[in-house]
Each structure stands twice: as C-alpha cells, then as structure tokens.
Length: 294
Ligand code: SF4
Ligand code: SF4
Image (cartoon, rainbow, N blue to C red; front, side, top):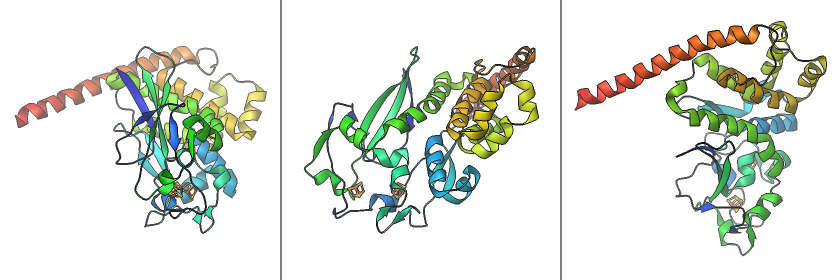
C-alpha cells in the first residue's frame, strides 16, 4: 500500500507513468501555433516557494499577493488548504501578456513541469518518498507534434526545476506523512487548517507569530535564529515546515523551554483522544447511514 500526494496538474487525460530516463518528444517555442494556449486555461496550484518567488518578483507582501493573485481551494477531503493562481473569468492567467509569461524567470513549479505532472509517493514503512512523472497530453498543446526529443531529466534541467523541487520537498513530505497516517489522526480542526495556511503561504503573518513574545517564551531559540527568521523568507518558510511537524505530529523539531514540552504532551494526549473518538463516531455514523439506506 502506498500514499501519494500530487503536486497537481489537473487533466482529464489518463496518465502514463514515466521516470527521469524516459524520452519526451516535446518542444515549446514562441513560433508555435498554440503559443500561450496553456496559459489561457491556467489551473496552477502554488507551493509555498512559488509564492515567495512570485511575490518578490512583483514586489508585494505574501499577504497582498495571496489577496490579489490567488484563490483558495481544499487540497483533499480533509480540507487541507491550497491556493491556485487567480485567472480572469475565462481562465486566462493574469501574468500572461502578448509576449508570453510576464513572470517567466519566477514562474511556478507546475508551469515549469508542463506538459509533465509529477507525483510523490510514500510507500508504507519507508521514510523517503519516490517521485514519478506522467505526461499530460492536451489537444490544444501542439508541442507534442514537434520533432525534438529529450529525456525527462534533460527537459527538467532546461526548465530549472531543481531549486523548486528542493524547496518544495519537505513541505510535500509533510503532506505525504499526514496522508500515510490515515484516519487515525482524525480530521484536523479548523484552527489547525488555518495554522497550515499561515505557515505554508502567508509569511508576513507567520513572521509576526514567530517574533511574538508568546512564541519566544515557548521556544528555546537563539538570537541568531530569530534574526534569520525576521530577515529571510526562505529560512522562515523552512522553519514553517519544522513547526508544522511539531504542531501536527508531535515531532520535537524545535526546542522548547523547560517544562513546556511535558505540559504540551499531556494536553496533546487529550486532544488526540478526543479527535480519535470523534473520528470513530463519524465513521460509525457513515456506516449507520449506509445500513439505513439498505
Ligand atoms: S505564470 Fe506564466 S507560465 Fe504560468 S500560467 Fe501564468 S503566464 Fe503561463
Ligand atoms: S506548446 Fe504547449 S506548452 Fe507550449 S505554448 Fe503551446 S500549449 Fe503551451
């Protein structure tokens, strides 16, 4: 059994699984008849690192970027919050202009991968995930009719996905782990989902939280770390993943001041037990409903 998390690219097409050595016949260039067609039907899910790159590119805070350029959605049935690039009513990406992509050097992960999708999978019992690729063939995309052939690895190198993959990795693993734990952890309460949103996407709000007195009184971090969290977005984003591991799974990823951990562990036991009971009740209710229908 395995759990998977799609770093999504949505398509109705049936995926063909590929690896880095697989050949890809594809070329996209300015002279092609479909130029920009893909950006006119944009369904782009953003990662935390995508947001950092884009908000810096256009000179906005994360909070303003989220407000002006994204739409929220739920990534799974448990309501994990995600964000997509905002489009106009016809589905055209707001970053598209006649020349092409106005944010090309900082375009999101999904735009770099297209026409590939990729999927991380965590096999039960394994601590590391595996990445698989699949080809998205859409009628409007004529790049598949071009003669250029390269391996998936070559294509991804050309698209400069490596830095994005490295930056996204821990965040993706966080979700894989959540899924691999299944219903035993129960559905996250709304406050946890909001925490996930803040730590993942809204660096200004997360920074205020991390620099607050209550946070400093709880976590045992040195001054140098607080300076880095104040000044560097990437450090803050990576810290956000560590913080979520602690908040969601009880992993001791951030040192706490004396006595805080023990107190929290006691509280957590009660909360997890309450969630477990609520989940059992929910499943029981679903069973009862089925039985009633029968
Ligand atoms: S960000 Fe750029 S590449 Fe991605 S959909 Fe928008 S215009 Fe196209
Ligand atoms: S070839 Fe495909 S990816 Fe390139 S512009 Fe056309 S639709 Fe977009």
